[in-house]
Image 1 (cartoon, helix red, strand yellow):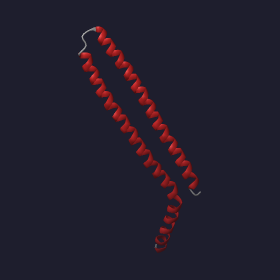
Image 2 (cartoon, one colour; image 1 turned 30 degrees about the horizontal axis):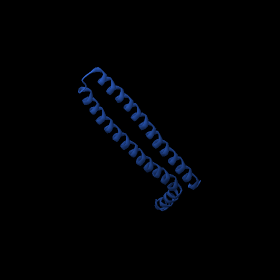
Image 3 (cartoon, rainbow, N blue to C red; image 1 turned 180 degrees about the vertical axis):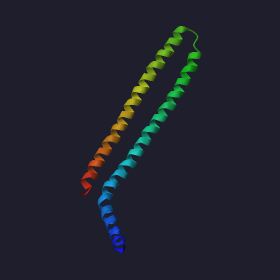
Length: 117
């Protein structure tokens, strides 16, 4: 039994030395991924908050309309603005997601070459 106790730390150390670079890059990628996903989530939350405020303002404006022409103009402007905002946000989120994917791919490639086989 003494012998197993003596060899166990050596095996563990060798395994740690071999696996640490690989797991280190995985943990680093996981951290980077979480930071970027958090940024994307914060962006989406801010967008939704802004849109909610704009929708409430539009409802208030619609309630104040005095004729059908005014109502139609407000509705058309609201739809145009809403579509433009959502398209811009989709583009921004796609750009942020693409950046995350690119950074992670480059990082993985860099660490893949640094990992001993």
